[in-house]
Image (tube, rainbow, N blue to C red; front, side, top):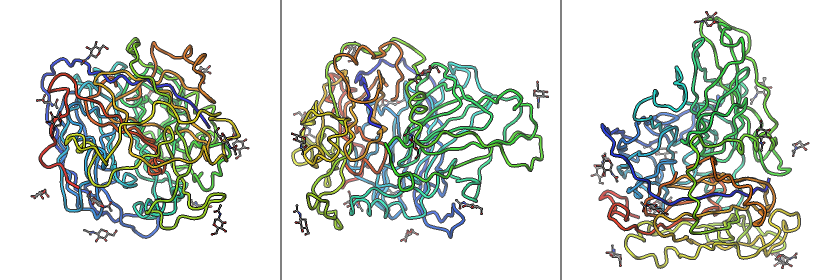
Length: 562
Ligand SMILES: *[C@@H]1O[C@H](CO)[C@@H](O)[C@H](O)[C@H]1NC(C)=O
Ligand SMILES: *[C@@H]1O[C@H](CO)[C@@H](O)[C@H](O)[C@H]1NC(C)=O
Ligand SMILES: *[C@@H]1O[C@H](CO)[C@@H](O)[C@H](O)[C@H]1NC(C)=O
Ligand SMILES: *[C@@H]1O[C@H](CO)[C@@H](O)[C@H](O)[C@H]1NC(C)=O
Ligand SMILES: *[C@@H]1O[C@H](CO)[C@@H](O)[C@H](O)[C@H]1NC(C)=O
Ligand SMILES: *[C@@H]1O[C@H](CO)[C@@H](O)[C@H](O)[C@H]1NC(C)=O
Ligand SMILES: *[C@@H]1O[C@H](CO)[C@@H](O)[C@H](O)[C@H]1NC(C)=O
Ligand SMILES: *[C@@H]1O[C@H](CO)[C@@H](O)[C@H](O)[C@H]1NC(C)=O
Ligand SMILES: *[C@@H]1O[C@H](CO)[C@@H](O)[C@H](O)[C@H]1NC(C)=O
Ligand SMILES: *[C@@H]1O[C@H](CO)[C@@H](O)[C@H](O)[C@H]1NC(C)=O
Ligand SMILES: *[C@@H]1O[C@H](CO)[C@@H](O)[C@H](O)[C@H]1NC(C)=O
Ligand SMILES: *[C@@H]1O[C@H](CO)[C@@H](O)[C@H](O)[C@H]1NC(C)=O
């Protein structure tokens, strides 16, 4: 469904009180082949970290320094993005291939080193090269400095990570190459997974959560799926959401969680009356896709078989099947909208009201002329030789090939790598969400480019994201590297600049990644990997601030070269 979002992006650096007892938490990630089977098929070779799927969980406390030695034993280029980490003063550790670093080649290695300051909660890490994050991902938890007692809600007795994913029988790198060459989005995954298991409805291995009676559980839910927003429920249980994207929310009660790729939700799971006392009670935890596209054929875009796990209370020897939750239908936009628009920030009055830069940015699908990579580009009547593309303000983002953008900036040699002309408004004003433009070739046609928007250090940006219904009408989970933003308002249809600003929540809007950004280059893109490949992205270039700490540092000595 076409949707417009109003975001506020405050590029300020908050002052950090000096933190005592910061530790160094150190990990080695050996990325390599893993032979595995998930749907009772014969074993296939995937790419995984330390032979584990999901990969290792990084546990840190606020203020710590995280050091990860990445050794690439896989046959593919590799990078890791630390999703949601601000990377203050460490833009070289952010991870997107060709934006902040050249990839780590097979047999190469690189040490990611960054501090986790002024943020806490559930985040995650994943590969930022090709579709490899389908299997190269894991959890990153930042505890408050004072431990669980410092949570701004009653301390739960136990915590469980619930990481949601998608499983393909085919090699995901080949899948991405196929999509690039044909210009057609990849077909849906073969299964949805919970902690990497598809569950009973795929007639295969099911994960089990063993719960103790009368204890409170906090679930750290992460959507690590490549392309699919998910509805999440547990039969006979409800939730109190306490955080999203590692930002505390006012407690929000719901029986369903809606979560897009890249997002996280921390929720206290509450059994319905009578359930906690049921010794040996068994309940399904289940996920099913949320498809925002209008009249999309679910059979091609999404598998409608639910992924499940079993939640089982200790003390019984139960054999009866678990209770199934009543799941929303795949196109239940009303339920998704209620969940996504109803959350508010725990701490009010943090929105910077003085806006320095206003941007109105269309996001959506279209087409472009076939490039040299599209070896099997098909005629697309009425114009031959076009291929599926996506864009922001009609600029279809393309990664540079010879040097990373950040390295080019550092070396003052951005010529031929990127240009500083990302537009503040779309080139053509039209009825973005009306029926008419769908087939209009002028409106659909976009051009490949590598454009950035340059911002002075510590500026505040208000961005209206206007979805279009060109080609495909669905919502896009926009992710911004390096900082959080406040979501001031969301709605359907075209944004109205005279009446809609009155609907902005400037008091306690939900925060979806924070108020701080160091200098550097920060990628903003759709977190559906299929859309990112087709160009749904842009980059902010944040200029140096007045001090050495607020300026772009030199690259680490082991930074991979192209
Ligand atoms: C950022 O700008 C605000 C005013 O807009 C100012 O109060 C603050 O001190 C600045 N922060 C830094 C780190 O420069
Ligand atoms: C990893 O698997 C690929 C096939 O997917 C194979 O070509 C390669 O030789 C394997 N590498 C190692 C180190 O086993
Ligand atoms: C990271 O934290 C350490 C220890 O507190 C500090 O010495 C270092 O300067 C910090 N690094 C950055 C880039 O802020
Ligand atoms: C990392 O790469 C360097 C340079 O190629 C090499 O000397 C070193 O042995 C490698 N380290 C590991 C752990 O592979
Ligand atoms: C699981 O098995 C049942 C019964 O044999 C079958 O109807 C169903 O299609 C199977 N599901 C999958 C996803 O293979
Ligand atoms: C859980 O609470 C119920 C109701 O208060 C009680 O009957 C039961 O014994 C408790 N179970 C445990 C394991 O503490
Ligand atoms: C959801 O899909 C069903 C069948 O695919 C359709 O009948 C229904 O109108 C759709 N609902 C919405 C809100 O689009
Ligand atoms: C937010 O929640 C309230 C109470 O459940 C409900 O009345 C309202 O419609 C919700 N808002 C949206 C946008 O769904
Ligand atoms: C597209 O290509 C086909 C086959 O080569 C040709 O018949 C047709 O005239 C072309 N259409 C246009 C608009 O160029
Ligand atoms: C880039 O240009 C700036 C300003 O002109 C200069 O201070 C800096 O040394 C240059 N950096 C490199 C790596 O040449
Ligand atoms: C396509 O849209 C453009 C811009 O709104 C308009 O000028 C043109 O007439 C439209 N073309 C068609 C065939 O509707
Ligand atoms: C891997 O990275 C190197 C260095 O940037 C690049 O030359 C090469 O084309 C990349 N390989 C693939 C398959 O993308």
